[in-house]
Length: 269
Length: 353
Image 1 (cartoon, one colour):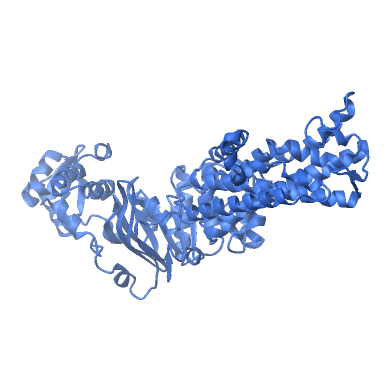
Image 2 (cartoon, chains in turn purple, cyan; image 1 turned 120 degrees about the horizontal axis):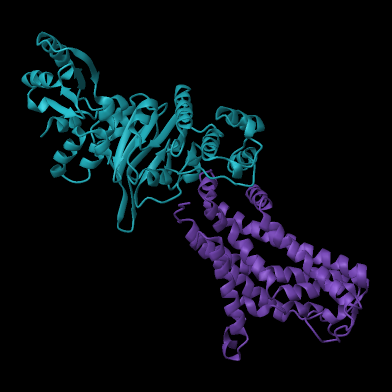
């Protein structure tokens, strides 16, 4: 825990940390503002998931926001969050300062991973709470209608929103682990972050061709919209279970390889 | 063999061989706090460190000398466990690196190359953060070490705004923070102005006087002479000489002779010590007379009616040459010995090239 809080202190002293958070907070707020100002509301089933429902019920704002963010900003921020703590320190030259202290390499690696997750959790809280606040202020919050047409209470709706966020977080752990893996190979944080993004984009493109359907169950990028199944009544768990399996295997594999590399890596900067 | 070569061979106290167990002899009754054993690091084709054996005793201010690229920084990186030896190992007290790196690091403080800190944090916060990793740093201790290196007044400014010299001093403060057994400083005076160099050397001397073991890497022989009690000279990753600093100096007692009639004095000196013992250096007469030879030389010069203006040790100038000679002559074989010896006799400026 000490290692994690020290890593958190480090990221709090970097400006880019706040850029990411501000961007994440801005998205749900801007969605609400845009929907409120525009004359033509999206018809049901039109636009990104949950967009049409927001004007009737503000509780959908955080869901609409994470749906939009999952395509680009979330993976990008996760790639950077995973790449900067390790490769960024090598870049800055402080890695050798840090590693000259009596802390095990394993603890260092996992504290870097942990702080990236912490960073994203804070970001997701900003999206969720900011979205709820903005949606509630403009459109009000009501019991919500599920994709199956049934109505569930606000409390149950909030619970499912939390579950949806956890599922997205699990997807982002894949990106964080991927970026961490690349940053054990490179001393440039941008190289590591971009490599992770390239993998993400390439996999996403492949997922869109039916020829590559055989890969789908194994790629973490193909479960982007799995969280929608949480808003069926009853919850349709099967795709969520598959998603979690793919995420778990991806994260475990990447962490293992990262650890194997990092424990024997020559630290030159 | 030239006389310079003889002086060379005679110089090292402990000998240059790494086969013998060096630690036991050199430290006598003092414990060995840091030792390398057959330490080797290969980067691809480059053999950066080649079977390096050295031992630092408790209380030593140990000079780790070598030209740029000799393998000093690579060695220090291995001691800190930042990079892994190709073969061999390091012992810090009874902790073996790389295996027992974390335990070994509890007894080490210092920096490799240029000390690096978090630029957006103040010096104080940097020390708090870095000190807290695997240890504990009280505010009093932080103030104490900042004071030691003369940064107390600037302790709350961001490190990003620090000059090179201030960062160097902060590096030393960070090294001292946890009161480690051994302090390792990698060329702490490099890039500093003369005052900064003087301050850092003074600081290292004080640390040594207070009983702290310091491992000081440097490429300046005179620096090591000023602050260290023992030293090793390495080149191409290998030990050239190890021993007390006094023994590193050439034992060759050359003197510079300035007289009213240098030509006549040259004849006199040559008559006494032979052609080998007399040479010219930028119009100065350099005589290798030995301890006993000097009074005799002066007597003869006076007897010959030559006005003796000054007889001074030539060694100050000879020191850098000696270093160059050592590091060059270990480059290849005996064939280069002659050239190295020539370099030693030529004017200093030329030899440094």
